[in-house]
Image (cartoon, rainbow, N blue to C red; front, side, top):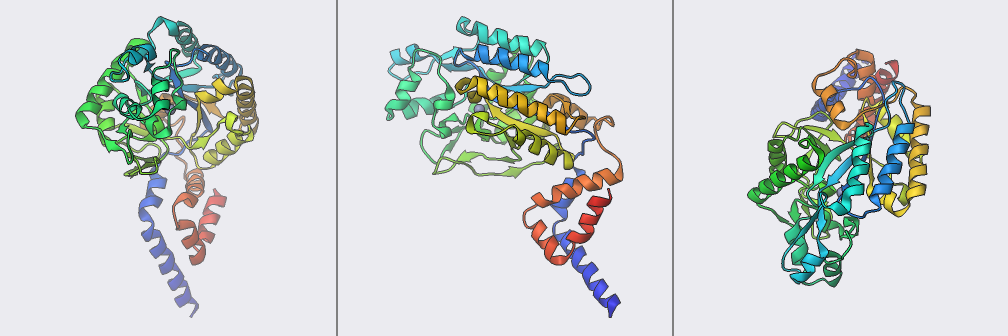
Length: 395
Ligand SMILES: [Zn+2]
């Protein structure tokens, strides 16, 4: 009788494991890191408000003050935007033609110098965000019927793209009306080739890491990025390819784990901790994110944005520095890496970074299972959660 019951339970557990085999195996294959890793990812820098120069200089000094146990300073990525609208020239055409004010313009000398100083000091890691934080024809189309849009597009000072309606901040769809319409592969290809060239002219190297504005992109974008030299793509763990009727990112056609490859061969990274001091996020949020990712054997990629440092510079700097120091206190062996260094470690299965021992891998795997939709509930109901928890603890 007991043997029968035992056999029934084992069969039930086997059935559960088989039903979830795909996501369970993917989380076992996903590389597990030996050390806590923290990367601050910051988007929207480049052409835009001139106050960025001061913000970047102070950020660079802050990051250089915070060092990991190997002496490496904290690293912040700069998601780069290469142009904003040239308001007066657009105004002269009554919003029928788009003209750009590029980052190379002398008005941005101080912004570029502040970036270069931080890159030289090893605290800024630039990556491609886009030639601009919008699709220019979509802005012109929207401006035909929208006064606020016309005013924004024709402003005399370099504008902040944060002030655009969110759907129009997506570069790789036409969201001038909703739901958005897809762009042709040819126009995507041409646009990426052009922006990679201007990125190289400004920063001296091809873009190796890309992060799509508002996380809306598709296979055609990835293929064009691959041709331009992009090896790594920052994702939120899923890919939205459109804006729906309500203007939200939608048409999700793929989900991804760190280390998985795109169709074009790029390595995906996942950035899923949000830290926006100007929205009230406290320093402890950084620590919580780092500790949770560390238990999962994952790097902690923290998303933040320029607006924090334009709208509330002193307070945002203080919160960021407190968060980094708290993270160092909570995880003294944390390492600061750039996304590209992380990708190289993953691709090379570098034994200095990648865990290969069975028991720590089991613990990290167990910590990843709760995120699988429905698995947690099914595991609890079937009793499978017990042996899994034992595996996770034994490690
Ligand atoms: Zn952005």
